[in-house]
Length: 124
Image 1 (tube, rainbow, N blue to C red):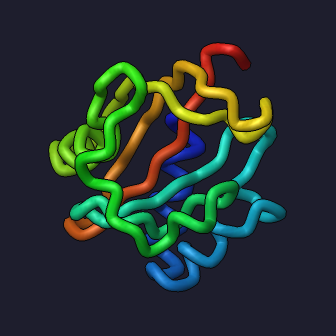
Image 2 (tube, rainbow, N blue to C red):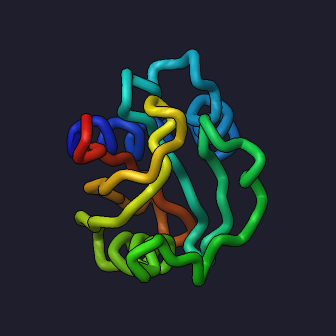
């Protein structure tokens, strides 16, 4: 998963934000691998890429908490600002009918304005 996210961050730096976000939002591209997929947020919590929940694109999700009370988007933004790392939270799994499952996420900054991440569901 870490290599997948690092590759996405490198892709974003090489191809630019617009092209990268387009690629990350396409569920038929290389940034969706079975249950792994790349998501992207700006550092303020606005969704840039979420290939299986594209209705959220452009919405600010800062302050959103999972069913356990974890402020997952704010946590990811903080972790990315610190250079990247992991976070655990509960999130709907698109491969299982959007059932809420424990997810281990990993995020990396692309630059000081946005970050990319992915995650592995505990039930996977």
